[in-house]
Image (cartoon, rainbow, N blue to C red; front, side, top):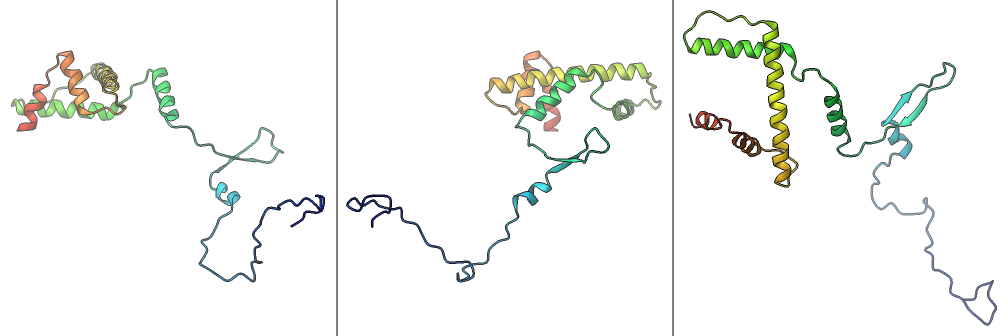
Length: 175
């Protein structure tokens, strides 16, 4: 085949293209699944944000998916900044009173103990500090084992290194 741009004595090859039949004359092959246009798919992920001016219209912006771990790092920074207690006060106080009542019941003491609010707050503060340090060390043990996920064996290892009584937990499991 000779191209119009080339000289007649030299022939150039043209690219082969496939000729498609119009859609009306094409035979139906299979049931097509419904294709939702991209702009309609994004509508579910969009968020309406208002501008500062009252007369200006609202702007639609697509929400971006954050990278993995960004939310966790944001939570870590948030909890490092705050000095509030992590465990809610009332459930913790109920738990302390319940455990105290059970211990007194086992020992045969009928009367209930009363707790000062400062004593409960001091107990909660000490408990949260202990648990936070325990989980920090547990995380280091998991990282040392080339893992990201902490496991119960990491906690028992940390408690054993610290010299805490781990045998008490083992005795309860066998009973």
